Amino acid sequence: MYGAIVVLLAGLAGFALWSGRTSGAAVASEAGAAADAPKPSTPPNARTASPEADAAAQALAALGPHKQARLPPIPFRSYAPPRPASVVTAAYQFAAEHPEITSYVPCFCGCEQAGHRGNHDCFVRDRAANGDVVEWEEHGLECAVCIDVATRSRQMYASGASVRDIRTAIEKEFVPTSPVMTPTPKPPAHDH
Image (cartoon, rainbow, N blue to C red; front, side, top):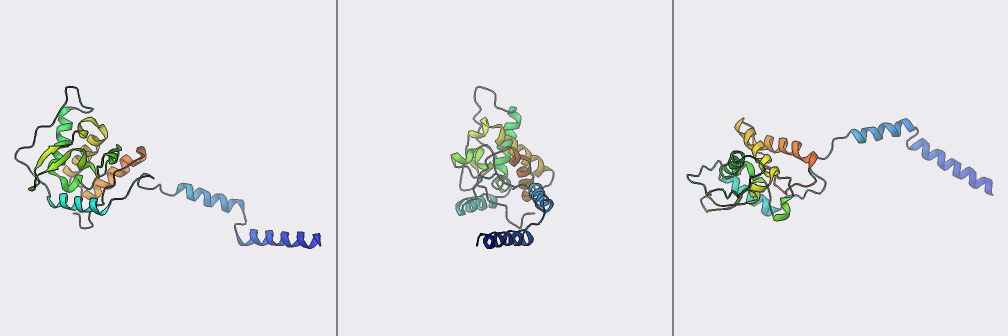
């Protein structure tokens, strides 16, 4: 009786080996392929954009490039910001004048905890009905990540990159070093 059970178990084990992976080399090859697979393009704990965030980004993008005759003064502090004042000023101005870009570019500093949906929210707190900035978000003054994301976006925009290309490059640059990302909507497919 015990002999029949041993033969049956050996037969089942042999069948499992024959029908499954039959060599350690095959298993190692598949494990290597999994390790070489591309890493996710977003941090593992990144949240997806809500329908409200999508609508907000679309409304901002509808403003298009938005030149404003007179921007409010940037609320610099008595101490130096993390980047030169000229770089900080350029970041604020870019966010004000290009909501069609910054509303689709994520931020990676953890500011989603403050309700930010993208890099635009790091610099602009409120706009008038006509799209003019009426209040700055002070967080951008203190955060090198926010400033760097806006600066990189501005540089790419000046070189003719589309918002989709800008976002792709920003994610490629910042995701590897950041555990978080704002829940920023993806740019529309008809981006230039």
